[in-house]
Length: 239
Length: 289
Image 1 (cartoon, rainbow over the protein chains, first blue to last red):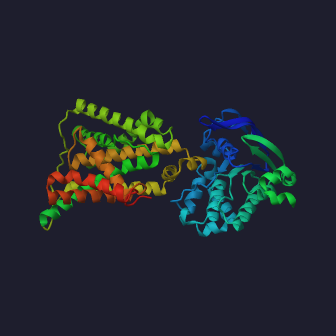
Image 2: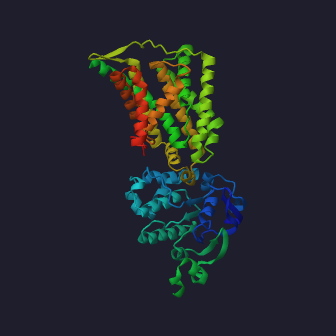
Image 3: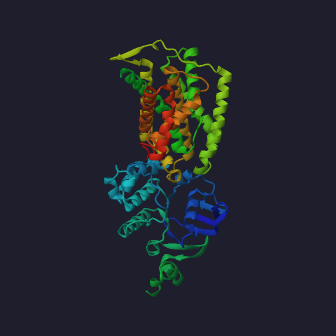
């Protein structure tokens, strides 16, 4: 479904990714782990079309995605929830969600989209007339996921959805991701909360210094000593 | 006393046009981060378009807006595709620099072209009702200027509604707030820029029409109007069109008050003083977000 082959990307003279290959299958939840600066966000940004690959290919449902402009990547059903949420703070919750359904295909399903988002995040229905910047971090993350859902994604990519959110709400966000996945949406997740990510995901890749350093079933990686030592902290090794 | 009141009323009347002149500049700068210093020349062109629509086609002066606005929209599309569309491909930080170069070049070219085509003479649209005056007590309100103020307010109100309600209006606001996030929600940001620039140019055309009816135009008015618009943009801040209109009124009244108190020579100075004071005390402007 999503197939990345030998991808290289970077900014200016800095090469961030080289030779990255991975796949996300239909209905899968795939996590991407790795230390800060490994290139995780760069990979998501490149798939979303904000950054042109230097080399290699990105294929989505059989078609080349590497040369597609970002707003048309959304139109094709590949949607990114960026790091830091990047909502339109001076607008209401409702306006943010409506803008999520800007693409032609999503606009036709807008009413159903609103219902889907409000069913998933009932809090947002009560706050739909509030300005987004007045919401808490957790509520803003719900709007960010909701805005992406409004685009009717078939692949939902999330960059650090737990960043800056109260722990209680992280669990609720992850539960909603599982529910979104059950409705048939593939999920590609970059997450520093490795425990939560591997519990949710089916498979995971480890990205280190711009290269794929490991991969496997999420349950296996949770037991893997290297992964535990590197990403779950020294205490985790003993348990 | 009544002389001062008379001056202040005239200040409000021209202030509305300052607001309208600034609205287009504010929209383009706020959305595209492009500073179009040829905005005053676009106002000048709008003025000539209205002048000839009245002189050659016999349109009603205010009715000529119906012709000038679509023509200016079209001009905006052409200028965006031919010039400013290339600027927005750069990072936001370099856009201002590049747009200043292009804007100054365009301003010089349009000025020279206007002198060549229409001579440097000052012109004004003469209306059948041009001399009419509304007397309130002993204050005289020129009717055409009052109508111009009213139209300026309606146009800015319309723009406000457009940005608040229209699908692409919301897209323009989204692109202005965070263009990358706008792309990620599926908005064609370049098209949003094109629309914003075309609307900005149309506002300049409308402002020029009102200027040529209520005041006068010549090929060299561009710089003056760019300056007034810039002062209002700084005074009002970005993000609120109604705020920009109020900012225009404030500048008009401040100019009139200083001219009445210190003499006409100080009319132009007060705007620059406001400009500096606002930048020092409240860099985001009175209504800036």
